[in-house]
Length: 281
Image (spheres, rainbow, N blue to C red):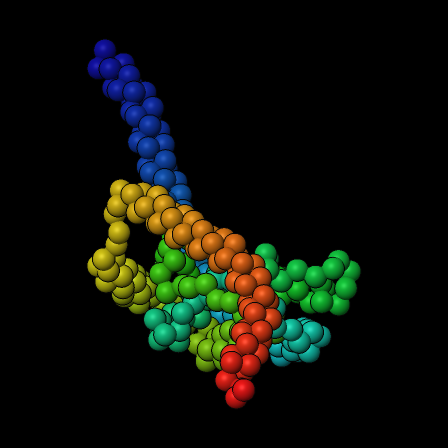
């Protein structure tokens, strides 16, 4: 009976050992899986860092050499092909007197230059000037990755309306690209500078000027409406008096002329009579 029980216990130990071995094997697999996952995660992180670094390097090289001498040559050809004229066009551009920081000046001017190229610089289709403008549009679109935007589109701080000839406008555009090219070659990341403080100074300065201008005495609207009819009435009265005086003079002049015409004969006769009286008998 004891032998039978001992064999029964051995039979039960065998499945238990197998269960323990299976649990141990599964733990080893989990550990291997975790190790493999950690290894893959670190490799992926390393790859992402390398890729981001290479992308940043490509962007830096891209911005540094974005504007070439060929673009400046195209602008010079546009300038040389313009007809000299006194006609002026209106456009918005940065007021350099308000914004003296060269980096912030160019940064704000960039988005205005895009508007000028897209909306103001228009030439007949399929002409050399039109093709040059398309090339400048492509350049300005590519430069978007080199500039960060620090202000809202509707913010007109540091901006005023210019009235210049097309030749002067193109020279201004060429100077912008030339100065931008020089700064990007020195530091490709220069136009990521935060210029909010510089733009805010322009806004506050414009607000002060507007406030000073509004302190001038102004005529109330009600007084203005009362003055206009009074002025018109005075002008009509003065005009009527002048017309009456002119009419009176024109009516009087013919009578004066007639009397002056008749007087010489009478005067001559009177003079002859006087002479006859004065002659001795």
